[in-house]
Length: 347
Image 1 (cartoon, rainbow, N blue to C red):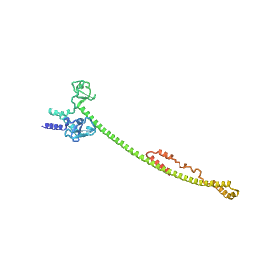
Image 2 (cartoon, helix red, strand yellow; image 1 turned 120 degrees about the vertical axis):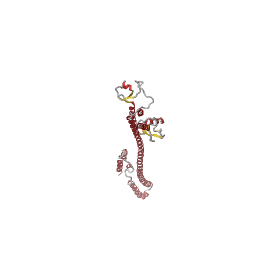
Image 3 (cartoon, rainbow, N blue to C red; image 1 turned 30 degrees about the vertical axis):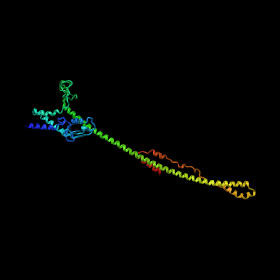
Image 4 (spheres, rainbow, N blue to C red; image 1 turned 180 degrees about the vertical axis):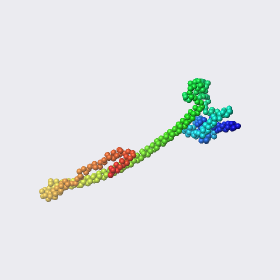
């Protein structure tokens, strides 16, 4: 009676540990869906592939138990969380089955049932090439190849270490699954790095654009200062030009007036000299001689511009130092040196 109750309890537990897709006991790794139902990862992958044949990034399938719509990210089924609790319960269940497998033929058959889930799910078992009637059912650990029992007893693997095919299958499947998990995690880290690189590229482009704009504004400011300074210096040249031209034209006007007066006096003196008699000449000569001498003396002492008055070369601008400083303009602390040097030059 106790054995029967235990058998019923184990069967009930086995049903709870059965995958709703393959109807066998869960094959590790076991994944848990957002709706809290569990699936073998292999079955979940088959279901996902059937709903997403082109394997785009992410995907959708429905839970076979409650029809809840499961949305996957770009990692697909491998992005689902493993249910380690269920996996541990399966291990304990199998250990109990192996430990209690001596309790009668009926219970023995029920305890061995879970072992069938450890076999690869395939429609047709491969046969040995050396022994065509023998199926491949063991794994040669020494040669790292699957083989049959006849090869172990009589064939080339008789001196090799072998293990049941199902146990090696499960171990390597778990190893591959763990490797896939690690690879998916690594891919996630790489994707995060790629995202960071893209964000960094965008930041570099944005910052570069701002730097270019700022540089353009600084140069526009320099152009404005140069244009303003240019206008100031041109105005100084123009003012001096106007002053000198006005001074020269004033002198020229005075010289013209004196020239005209001198010409008129000359004509009068010549007329007196050539067309007058002695008495008439003597009556006017004293005054005109005095005027003529005074006019001749005044032309010798006439005001003149200073030597080099017309020159404008003192307005020559020495830009060599400024050109050197402009040529050394650069980003960073050197800008401060440039500004200090420019301030010293102005002083």
